[in-house]
Length: 407
Image (cartoon, rainbow, N blue to C red; front, side):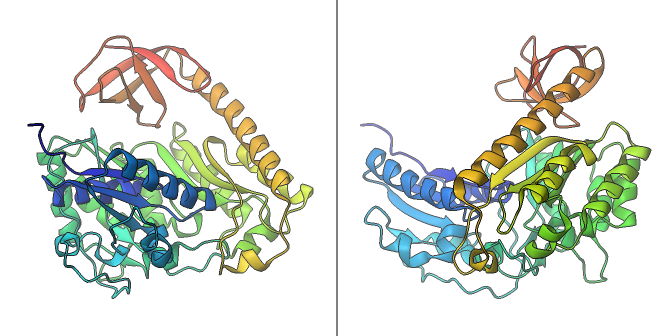
């Protein structure tokens, strides 16, 4: 008799989903269950979800198939109506073990409480994604994530510390702090993200700490000092820029100007030049003219972006941006391609500047590659133990990665 299949979690979208998928897998250990952890940030992501559901049902016909995540939270009825789906679990309950029992009542209303993610059963990755924040109180005109994730809420310091200690005990020496709006993290005393970074750096065994996407408007002085002055905070700054034109930023209802973003990068680079900058950028936002787009294209150089996540604008029903004058889809795609090409050229040039130098690389499975502190991908000449941090001499570069020899 063949063994009973265990749980299978398919995670779409952000790093927060990856972290939560680990927790879901631990809660479903031993069960013949398939979970699709969905993303709602673009229409393409929702289409991918539907395709994944159909594909998984065909491959696992005897498994219970459950859909959760932001797309399921925003439109639960649509997924519940799919014949392949057995149940839908809302985002408010996805980290509650009781919600995954067959008789649980589905709940989709947020109560503002913080729920500590259960620790994964084992170290599935060399780095640990720690969810220390969830939800968002902002109202960007293009975004449905507040509807999918609810109001902003922060992990208490003690809870964040417990997660870090569990990760270190599982052999994960790099912590990646994640959240929907990470820089909105606050404790009961009103202290910002720097407070939790300082606390976690005090956990024995933490060798590296990485920050996920940051809002340029919320990087305060204490956080800036840690980014530039604490060597265990990795030299990698990923900014939620979205656009480089001030009028488009206002219509997006973002809270920073392009000049403020440039100034932030300049201040970081002046004190820690090796910091690599990543950015999220949207092409073809409603009302965007060619001249406005040129400002976003220029932002790649102005902010020294070497790691860009580029998306053509995707209208989401019910958002203010969906009611604005739309840019034609072929134009959105063409502009996105130009952004990717510009960012790719800048990334390739940056990678070549690293040849001949040394990087400290966190080795990942299967042991032949990893990421440097600046998040450059590094391919190793010889396999090393996953989870090990090694000094690597960089011997060559391609347009997308480095190659090197462990010292």
